[in-house]
Length: 606
Image (tube, rainbow, N blue to C red; front, side, top):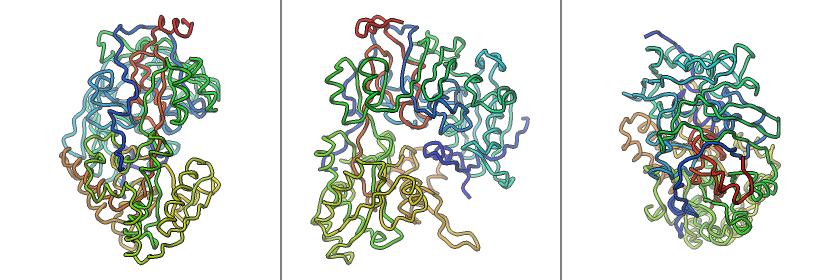
C-alpha cells in the first residue's frame, strides 16, 4: 500500500482524496514536424521590470470562481485554493527573485514549482539527509493576523503539528488518513523545540521536502476551537499578506493589506510586502463579461482563451499579454487491455495517422502546443524538446498515413477496423477536433464513431474505465511524476497473496496500462537520492512513453494572460506553484499599482 506525501500533490491537482502516509496519524514526541513553442518563445511581449521603484497603495482586481466565495477552510485546498493563499501560508513558496522580474531562471509558466526553485516561507530552511527523513526549521518572528481569537500571537511548531493532526483526522480533508493505518506506517513527527520539527516517513520519497513545503496551508487552533472550522469568512486568521474583510457569496471577496506581514520584497529587500492596500476577487462566470471587464479596466489581470486574444489586442493595445502553457494536455486514451489497442503497432499507427502538425497550423493557427506530455516543459531537467527526441519518437508526432497503413497491416488489420471514442458533450471544441481525427483516420481504414456523452455519464464511465474503446479529454499533467502514468498510464505492483493481479495503483489510469518496466523505473526513481539521476530516469521514461503511445497526443491551445500596464512588478507569471489551477493569487503580494499611469490611461486614482 503506497502512502506517501507525494500523493498529496495528486490529491489537490486532481481533486481526489487519496490517502498518504505523510498525512497518517502523527506520533509526536518531545525531542511535431513544427516543433512546439519553447518557453522563451511563448512570451508575446517582453516586459522589462519597471524602472521606477515600487509604490504602496491602490487596489488590484482579478476574477475568482464562485466556489472561492463559499469555501475558505484550508482543510480542503482543492476548493479553497484560489482564496486561501491570500490569507494562509505554507512552509515554502516559489522563489520570486528567480522569475521573469529577477534572474529569469523560472518562467512561472505553470502551477507547479520544482524543488530547486523553492525558497522558505513559514519554514526558513530545511534538511533532508535521506529519502525518509527531513528536519524543518521554522521562521521565527512570524505572527498571526492581529484579530480575535488569535490576536497576533507568534507562529510556532505547535501550529504545524496542529495542522498535520487536523488534516489527518478530519474526513473533510483531502489529506485524511484512515485510522486503520498500521502503527509502523504512520508518519512520525518529533518536536525538537519551539521552531524545529523532525519528520520521518514509512517509505522513501524524493518529494518529501517539496510536498511539505508546498501543499499544506498552516492553520491556527483557536478559530477551530471557537467556531468548529475555518470556513466562516468572518473568522479568517492566517499569517499571510492579506486579511479578508468582506465576502459576498457568489459575487466577490475583498482583502486588505496585512500591516504586520513578515516578508520583504526579494527584489527590493528594503521594502515590506505587500504593496497594494486592497485586493478584490470578482466572480465573473460569463466569458464575454470577463472580456468587457478587462477592456474597461475593471480587472487588472485575466486569463483569456487563445481565440479571443487577437481581438482583445486590437481593441485594447495598451494591455500587456503573454501566452502560457495549457493546464490539461488533450489526448486520446485507448483501452490497452483490449484488442486492437493492446498492440503497440496499432497505437503507433493511430498516432501516425493523426495530423497533429496540421491541426496545430490550420485549426489553432499556431496558438497551441503539442509536446507537453508526458512531461511538461516547465520541468527543464526532465523535459525533452521535440528537436532532441530520437527519430522513433519524433516521427510519432508527425503525419505519416502511409506508415500508419503499414503498421496496421503488420498488426493484422490491413483493411483497418471500426471503433468508437467517447467524448463529453460539454467540450464542443474537443468534438470539433475529433471530427477532424475521424476524417484523418478514415484515410487509413479506421472507421471512428464519435459517442457524444452527457457530462455526468461521461465522468461515471471514465472513472469506471468501462468505455468500449477510446475516450478523449484534457487531463492535468503538471506533476513531475505523472510520466509514470498516474494520470495517463498506470504503474502496477505484483498482487498480494490471495489477490488477483496485477493491481493498478492509479484511478487515473484511463488507458489501463500495465507496464512492469514503468513499475521498475518508478521504484528506482523513488529509491534514488541523487537528483541528477532521478532526472535522467524521468527523462528517459518520458521518451519511452511517447514511443509506446499510451495516449495519442493532440495539440492543446494555451491561454493568454492579459494585464493592465499599471500593474507593476508583474510579467505574466501564472502562479507561485502550490495552488491548483490558473488564477493563483500568491503573486499579489509582490505587485504594485502605478497610480499616475492608471489615472493617465483609465482616469482612475485610488
